[in-house]
Amino acid sequence: MATKKNSASSILAEQSAPPSAAPEKTSPLVEDKQVTITSSALQELLASVISKTQEQASLQTKALVDAILESRKPYVDPKRAENEKRWRESMRRQRLKLDASLKADQNRCEHIMGSNALSEYPDLHRRSSILKHALDTGEVIGMCTNCGRVWWPDDPDYFSQLKRHTTNKMSQAGQRFSVIAKRQLQKLQEKEREKEAQKK
Ligand SMILES: [Zn+2]
Image (cartoon, rainbow, N blue to C red; front, side):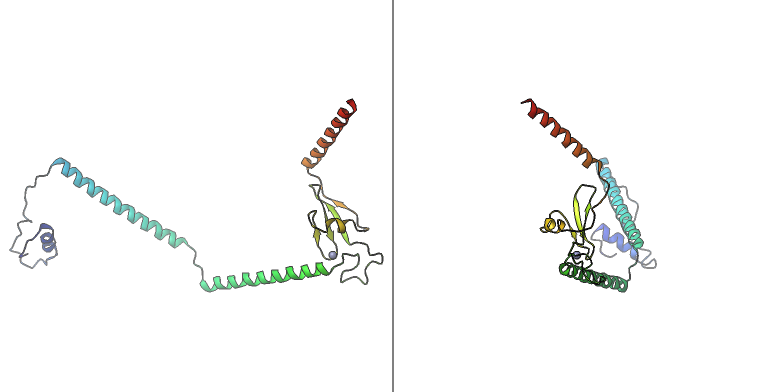
């Protein structure tokens, strides 16, 4: 209070001072004084105060929203998360083992009727245990009733395996309308071509 270098520090000093401290001394800045300010400067001052207030309000709102979102997150016990991770890994290893064992069985299988583990002896005529199945797309796949291997038309041994002698009958799924319509169209086009050829 003794030194009054600038107005802000003296106001702060005045406010923070205990009420008992030097009550008789009054700072000239505390006294009412007429201050003149231009209207543009006043507008600027008000705009700055408003923008500061809005900025602070938006920061507070953001902090509140963040806190609410954080409180809604379910608590995950790290021990439990670790257990689940280990369980998933163990399931994956089991799956890989099963896949490998199935693959080995399929490679060993001769795809001959009665050659699975439950049969006494394989078919004497060595007839194939592969059955053919027509999908609704018209595609024909093969499947061994012993080992479960499936043959698709792009498999390298598809034709050699599916043409083997067997007593299995072809099974068929319903046909898709688009496939039937395509065949009908092909037949019509063939007839048209035949007619054209006859005219020539
Ligand atoms: Zn097989």
